[in-house]
Amino acid sequence: MRVYISNYRDHWISPYTILEKIFFWREIDYNEPLIEKWSNRLEPISKGIQWFLDFVRPRVVDVKIDYWDTWSMDATLTPIILPMLKQLRDTKHGSGWIDPKDVPEYMRTSDKNDTDYGQQTFDFYNEESIHELKYDIHDRYDWALNEMIFAFECLYNENWDEQFWDKDNRKCDWNARQKIQDRIDNGLRLFGKYYQTLWD
Image (tube, rainbow, N blue to C red; front, side):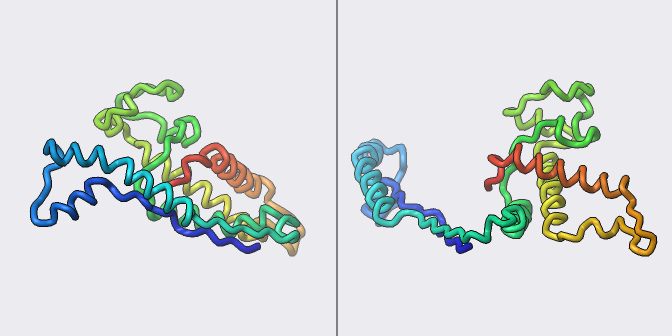
């Protein structure tokens, strides 16, 4: 496998940036009629420049898959997904919405809400209402990310279940092993369900 993905391209040159260069001797007021007038005239030019630069210098995505990469595709993807999840958790600037049904019960309700967590009893778009929650959307998202990370950490360590085997007596603590397997399964379920929230 060979993967090369370049950084995002930012080819937008704002009309106001152009006008700031033209009127270099003074600070411009964006609400000034003259500035507004020329900003409107320059916008199509800015869009044309952006289109041209996007065309001649697009973002590079080069992926080459070798035939052995799919022998065990889960094992191939795990060492890529795991560090990406960790970096997202440690550097993100926001949080995706996690259904209260997908987090532990103690994170589902606020001081003012009842236990009917299936109904939103707060206004998602009202910041004060969100802050009334004992566990807000950021706490829930962090919890979900940590569960995904736990699942992929276990999968990265192919021998994660050896701790449950007593090799001398050839016995396994199946109940304890199943608890970890259930947590792995749930982490993978969360990864699939909230795949489209994995952005910063």
